[in-house]
Length: 72
Image (cartoon, rainbow, N blue to C red):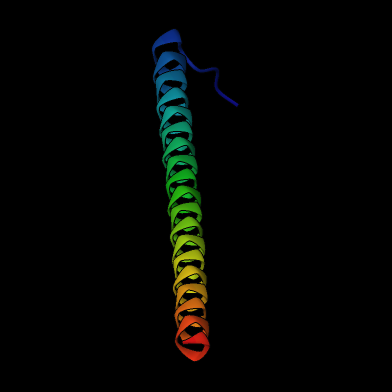
């Protein structure tokens, strides 16, 4: 098996480093995407909770109005 020259070895190292850096970059992008998706899901859940609370408040107000009308 022939020995690699320093130049060939350096090229291989650069290529390996480039591949590793590319892989790290992809992993970071995936993590960022996951974080964004999690944040969006949390925001959606919060919005849904707020809507539910508003609906409950409206229902309570309607019930109170109906009770007042019946009391008259």
